Length: 184
Image 1 (cartoon, one colour):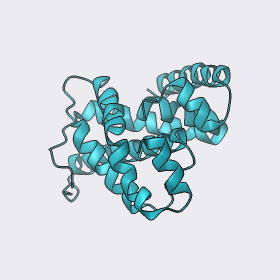
Image 2 (image 1 turned 180 degrees about the vertical axis):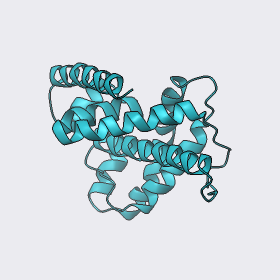
Image 3 (image 1 turned 30 degrees about the vertical axis):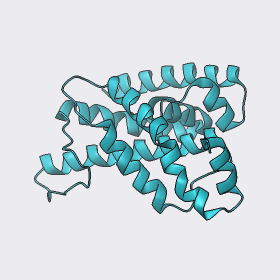
Image 4 (image 1 turned 90 degrees about the vertical axis):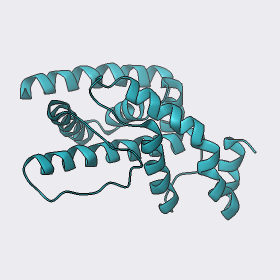
């Protein structure tokens, strides 16, 4: 069964299909994570496999995972990846300030330089502000940047046109850049 069929069966209430969902999506999730990590600095090492395993565990534990469409599923996975990366960056900040050390369940060590952590947290803060003003534009950024979805996949997930997604991406990218420069 391919992912689309499994999503359809899971949406119909098939418990077995729901358990097969992560297995069927694993390669796509790993490709998204690898694409995201390829854009990071060279001194930032995060295993795409470790990220996918953490996201998979989160998705398996969450009964609210959307199964209506492939796009919605991957949009949800994108948000989960973003949240894990943000949690990691915040933990690194606590450790830098002498806070309690927290053990991650990642199967490989996660290392990020302080500057990158600060940049990442600044991006998250700006993205939260954008979400208050323009929720759809923030979703486009999240799906594209954190989830690695194509414009077509985003359009499908958000049930909007490809042209709208392209416009939203350009406006959001410009707004985020200006906001980050003003705050920096």
